[in-house]
Length: 268
Image (cartoon, rainbow, N blue to C red; front, top):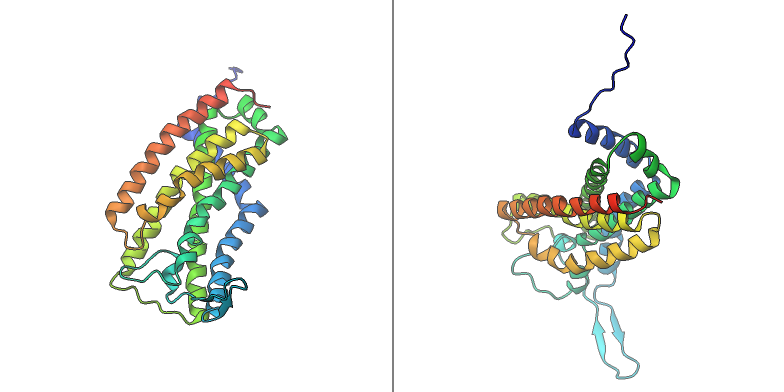
């Protein structure tokens, strides 16, 4: 009778799949995940309703006596982007505080998710007995993108609800529902770029969550202004393909950098 113990040599794909199962289980049981989704859903509703209520109100500068008339949103899609031919009046706030804020929100999730691994000692134990650095980076990047996709969808739903509650127009100004779908898909693929940056900074900062959050928000702001140009409301298949290609390149390049950082630095 052969009592030889045989160890299964698992492939890279099998190790990634196993790591993803663990991270998905942790993510869907995490309170932080649901808090971020709830914030993404409620934020556009509150912002749209409050801005609509303030529409037409007048504020006076006590020093100059100059009066300023507040202008609220006129279209429900202003939370997502600027419609073609739409005047910018009343849209200045929504040009900055719109769906693209979710890219910054994902930074919080990735940084706390990674820092918790190093603070609890889970990462050190994981690399010793279960997974390699490469699978860890891939898993964290994919998990962050999934979280980002849920936040984007929640923000879209919140924008629609906020527009309906405020009685705003849903006129697409010549665009179609397909353009909205392409816009959302492009943003989801572009999330790979941001999550890859956040993951690299997080594995470099390790258990220092405050440092990784500050670094991630700072790094993300460098690209933040480009999001609306790359993924406009009138996006087409070309925008989706470009975002997918760019996301894949960033994920591969920065993923390799994250792997190198984990190999060359201490795990504590």
